Length: 129
Image (cartoon, rainbow, N blue to C red; front, side, top):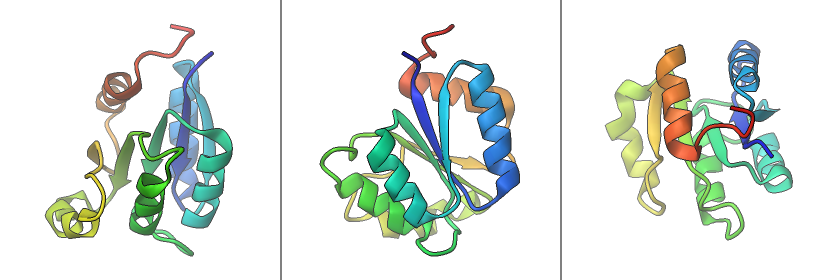
C-alpha cells in the first residue's frame, strides 16, 4: 500500500502541482483548500505526511498545525510547512512553542527534486517504486 500525503493549501495551482508530482511517484494524495477542511481530511485519511500552507482562510496553517500535533491519533505525522513566507521561519517559531517544530520549511515554488528527496526522507519511497 502506498503512503498517503495530505496537501493543505488554498492555492489550486499548488495543490494540483503537488498532486501530479506525488501521484507520479506512487503516493496517494488527498487535498484540502483550507485549515478546517485539512483537519477533517487528516482525521479521515490518517496521512503519512502533510504539506501545509501557512496563510489560508478559515483556519490558518499555524492553527491547523497546532491541532494536528495535539491530536493523539495523528500528532506524530510529519508536517512540512510549504509557504512563500519561509524567510520568516524564526518569526513563526514562536507559534510552535506549545508543539514540536515542523519537520521542514519549504519555500514556494518548491524545487521538484528537493521536494521528492524530502518526501523520501520523511516517509520513504512509495510502495510502487
